[in-house]
Length: 282
Ligand code: MBD
Ligand code: FE
Image 1 (spheres, protein in one colour):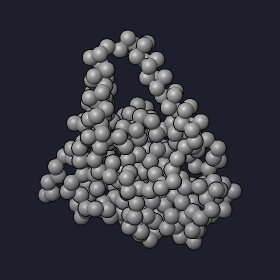
Image 2: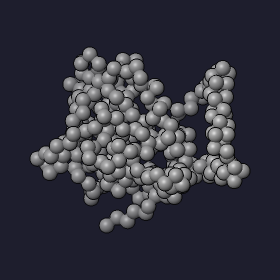
Image 3: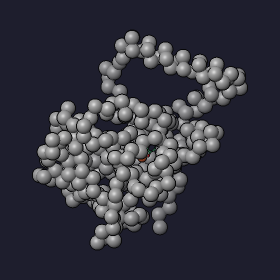
Image 4: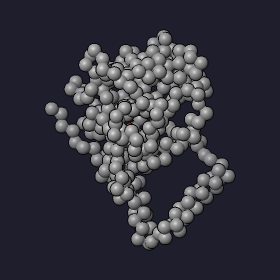
């Protein structure tokens, strides 16, 4: 039997900060105009002061807030915090004009350079990987219905215990992560296991804030997907499973009705779920 230590917040949050630094998302020339900076910074500071006024913020609360902000950085949890509480709005804004498949937030646990596996693919997993077997299939087309044979679909997910490889100790490096080029008709088949619901680490600053408000820290079980094809917009998405008790109260607000799978029992003793993609042109 493998023994898994529970990943601490400092471990998973800290790795997420390092992964963000390595991600290339902050391109060398990334910058915003003075006008834009004034609008965003000005409104952010006004929102804070309005809140203080509205709730008659005390010095004690001001200092708790200061200490908490310091701690979020020390825990490395800014990617976790921002992806849970803000990314859903940014994602909505940035994909508003799309005709094709709905997306969702990327979250903090994507890692570049996962192994490429030919379709039909089986994601890297341990010999005794726990969980219901899941066969995930579909076709990737453009919004006019033409198959995209050069598309690649990428999947990353938590295991049956809710842990992501590279963000929890004791897991093989690329466990349950892989990139799968489609076949000549745009079809893919990916064999994996159903992920478990995910709980935000409760021992870090984000978890402590959630506990202070007496909220729960759960996200419903989900698959993370990225789909790309030359000349088309990259789709970042999550897919969910009917019946999960947190589909209606995801702490990260990232569930959409279009993102529900409908898995059916298959002959392998597992389940099959189909999702067909439409990608918008660049
Ligand atoms: C996750 O697994 C996740 O998908 C998001 C968005 C935030 C925290 C953990
Ligand atoms: Fe996730």
